[in-house]
Length: 169
Image (cartoon, rainbow, N blue to C red):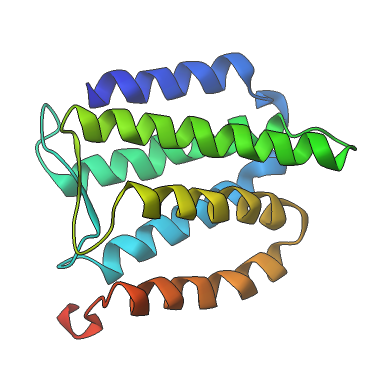
């Protein structure tokens, strides 16, 4: 099922993204990849969510596939389809992506491919998505501001979910 999902993200990005201008979105793709990898390092022994091993044998391998395939496709799809001028349309675009990405996660959780731990739940994911998509757009427009704001957001999540930084040995 996870592999089908990966291929669907690749197909959607191929079909509906602005591939010829991928360089415009490259730095924001890297921003998302960096923070995904940072999450994996900081929560290595205390994951807030875990991908269930199926054909892909481990959480780590699943996570790397999501980080290096799903996330670049997601960023490319999201950013290359943001409406140019009208703020209301941009807000609706963000809401659409929060709902879509949340539905995908809900499906994975419902079929047992995605498990929550340590107080994280579907509501936390929706809230996170409500932060993530505007941050992707902010990074695309003002990268330094996005990095500046991302650090306290990351620290907030580490504190709220009591991630034991001392477990990173």
